[in-house]
Image (cartoon, rainbow, N blue to C red):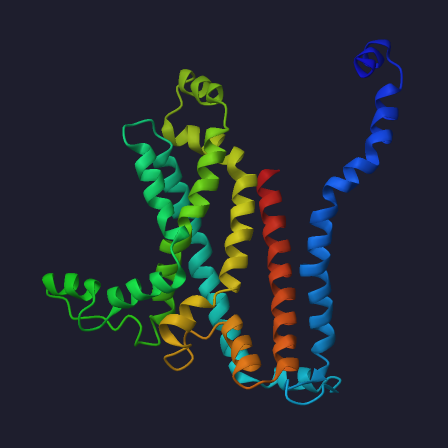
Amino acid sequence: MQLLGAMKRGRPGIRATAEKNEPIGYLFILPQVLGFLVFGALPLIANVVLSLYKWSALTPPTFAGLKNFEKLIGDQVFWRSLQNTIVYSVEYVLPCLVVSLALAIVLNQRVRFMAFFRSAYYIPVITSYVVAAVIWNWLFDYNIGLFNQLLSLLHIPPVPWLLDSRIALSSLVVMAIWKNSGYTVLIYLAALQNIPSEFQEAAAIDGANRWQVFRHITWPLLLPTTFLVAVMLTIWSWQAFAQPYLMTRGGPARSTTTLVYSIYEYGFVFYDFGYAALVATVMTLLVFAVTLVQRRVIRQSVL
């Protein structure tokens, strides 16, 4: 009541009340800030420091200076894994955006059994990567896989999905789109349902068709959501590890070795934790740079 009276009388009671409750607001955000510091900022700083050392976990860490950086420049495995990660991200982000938006538009329709279909598309998200890898290994199997069985019905020779270095990485991308698109579909669906129907009805009255309504109303209103989804997908693509680890072990011929998989090898196969920390730091900086570029592109699109 005092706050309402202050609003009616035009007195500075609102600001005084906000300043009085300001410490309480800090208490509410304190758990999130502590979580970021403990599990985000501090490990990142420790990772940067560790990249300057030579450490095998069996011997005490010794200061190496810039030797790890010199090794990185001439490391062909690193550059191949970086190339694979970039290709993986390019092949994954845009198609997953398109598929997610298309499915969200379809699932936004008001028809019978739509709740069932929405749940069905989300099932792969909650499916374990181990289970998904077993299923897709069978689908991609050269001899008895379902995909090659379907191709045989069309008299098409079998395809070595995971055995050919030219298409193995793209095969993992297909599996990743199936696995993760349900989550981004859910985000797009929520954004579509928050668009006021009055905008679309007014455009329809003015004679706009469905494509024009989507192009000039729906899509501009979805740009902030698209930026969020694009950033999420980009981060996920640069963190790809489960698929190459469970399905190809980085092969054939290093064609599916991603940055995270190479970090795993450097740290837990070759026990060079200092060098693994350096590669992880470089990957973090690259993801940050790509995110900034995406933000600028989306902002220019909005303006």
